[in-house]
Amino acid sequence: MGMTISQKILAAHANLQSVKSGDIVSVKLDTILGNDISAFMALEELEKIGRPPLQAARDIILVLDHFTPNKDIGTAEQCRVLREFAEGAGIEQYFEGGRAGIEHALLPEAGLVVPGDLIVGGDSHTCTYGALGAFAMGVGSTDLAAAMVLGKTWLKVFETIRINCYGILGEWVGGKDLILYTIGKIGTDGALGKTIEFCGPTVKSLDVEDRLTMANMAVEAGAVNGIMEPDPVIKNFLADRSRRKGIYFTTDSDATYEQELDIDVFSIAPQVALPPSPGNAVSVQEASGIKINQVFIGSCTNGRIGDLRVAAKVLNGRKVDSRIRMLISPATPGIYRQAMEEGLLKIFSEAEAVILPPSCGVCFGGHLGILAKGEVCLSTTNRNFKGRMGHPDSKVYLTSPAVAAASAVRGEITHPSSLI
Image 1 (cartoon, rainbow, N blue to C red):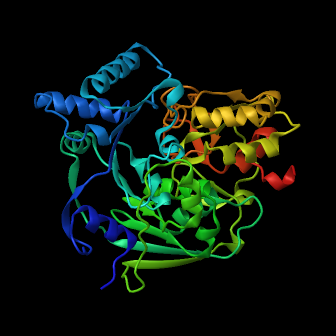
Image 2 (image 1 turned 90 degrees about the horizontal axis):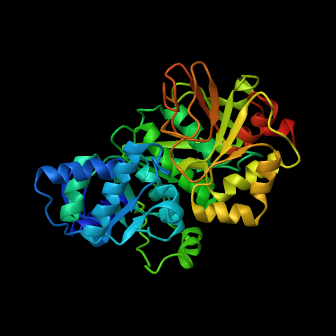
Image 3 (image 1 turned 90 degrees about the vertical axis):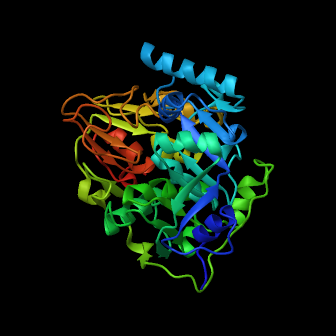
């Protein structure tokens, strides 16, 4: 019986010829990823057992991105502890400040993930790296601590749902719209505890950024990981970024799936997910006219240079509605610099948007743009549950950078074609 790409990666890292759904395997990890929340909690677990030596120090990547720039004394102390830990443990891949940015944008940009890798991270959106043909999943801080010490973990070989996308995407429709539409179709528990394998000619036609966005939000359908077969697009993306070659696994033609779903993308319009769930996806036309107080463009989902280019195209020569505020956060310092060199930051500034440093702070309601009671935010992030970005009585709508930028101009949810 054939294997899926996910099964092949797990089999290779378990040193087995083959695996099947339901198997429990012990696997060697290529990367163990922690941030200033999850790694700090993992360190607390290590302290309980006497801080054993880290057998996997060279495979650990620490990125301080959630509470940085430090929002208060408590988080500053938390980051200091991690800084000292990294230095003492000999962790060379430590990123903070102007070297960091949002972890799930930084690692692909820096070439730290290649096809065939097996990655665990103390953040649910670790599944982003499936876009590069890696098996990547989030774990709790206790499991993260064990992985940091051992360099391996155990897991179940998950059932796979195959989502085949075909057809040509319409104007202003991209990876964010496709994944919101998909989650709307299968529900936020439609892939609970499973792997989603995205495939089909539409997926192959997407650029790397759109693929990263789709894999990033697989977890919002309950999936453990989302993955795509690596192809020449991925190979070209990594050519000047990574010194490692990677292994370009593909799914066997006779692989079996728990479920298969075909999606014709031709009729998909730009999407908006209504609160309080990414599964409440509707067309932008159905949400048009909803008044907003804040617009945010950024996060590990949509803070990349392509996202900023789309937003700048809509905002160029226009102003943000004076009744609202607009926040824009390039996902990494590299993206920030590129946006500056391309003149995008000038466009944002002239539109009277607030340009923020690279940070996860806005997305999870940690700092930098907290919502007040009753406020409404239209955001390019990945989650919109109650209280996600601030007050429990605030509301968050999810969308693409194009819709977000157009809506910032109008002060209400707006289709970008009404401006351009």
